[in-house]
Image (cartoon, rainbow, N blue to C red; front, side, top):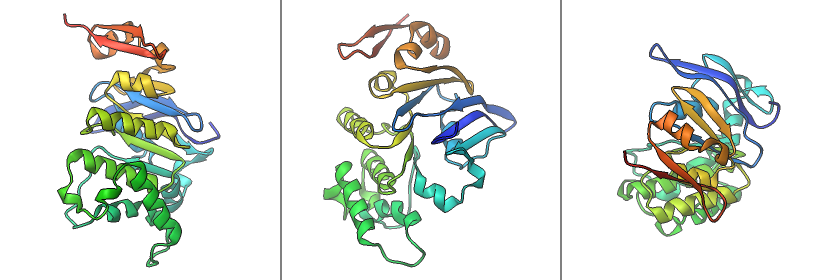
Length: 255
């Protein structure tokens, strides 16, 4: 694991319990990796460990072969961007202000935004369809609009790795597809925690399926999203067929 962002047999204990149990993930450069699993399976914790927000209790997280703990925070902030499930602020910021926060790691303290900063912010607003709302106050936005602004902030960072925790939450179907189309088109490595198995099948190059903090299966969506594994992990019967586009399609069955 000497290139990119990777976790090697990572475990993490919280509140006396094991939340991650020997998880390894090493996304290929430019790939999209979906992290799936029921609530409480460790998806959010894995992303926070990969981001350096939480330290592993055991195992290693590395970036380009260098242990994450040895990478300066400013350097890591330029490299890895994170979109959390919930973000809020009581400070009266505009949409452009929030997106501009993504440029903070690239600026020296007290210096005003450069032309490159302004270009990165404008590009991120355009990519997420938020240009028309750039002067609007953050507090007046809907949940879906706030999610898109947070993604724009991450894109303004111009990262090499992008970690997203349930980014399609609060988004209607159209914006779910638009967001995942955008992420798939970017020259970045994306690790995305998702609930929707069919979205993961459509957009992810690789799926990591977690249950009780451990990896149950990892690999091509067709190899992971099987009727047997879905029943084992989610305790729900499903019918898995192949879509006309060639990816698995999951239909849950009532019992």
